Length: 158
Image (cartoon, one colour):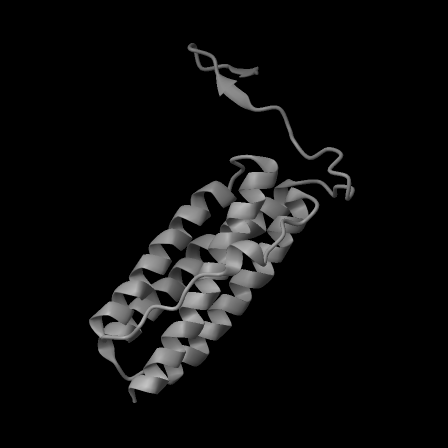
C-alpha cells in the first residue's frame, strides 16, 4: 500500500514540479506576465502541499529536475495555449489519482489541487488566450503597453 501511495504522490508532485518549472521559464523569458506570475506562486503552494503528504506518510520526497528540462514557448499566446492543455491534463490526472486514493488526507489535498486547476488556473489561461491576438513566432505584437491609473482615475499609457 505504501508503494502505491508513493507512486500516486510522486506522479502528482512531478506534474506540479513540471508546471512550476514551465511557468518560471515563461516568466524568465517574458518578464512578470499574468497569469503566469500569479499561477507560479500557486504551483509552489501545490508542491508544498504534496511534500507535506510525503512527510506525513513517511515517504521520501522525489527531487525536482524539471528546471533543466523545460523551455518556454516562442510567444505568450503559445505559452497560454500550452498551459491550457497542461491544466486539462492535470485535472484528468487528478481524476485518475482520486479514483485510486482511499486515504482521506491525500484525497482532501488532491481534490483541492484539482479544484485550483479547474476553477482558477484553467480559466486564467483560457482568458490569456482569448485576450491576446494571434502572434507571430518572433513575438511581434507580444507586449501591449502597461497601463496605470492616473491619480484622478483616468487611464494613462506608461
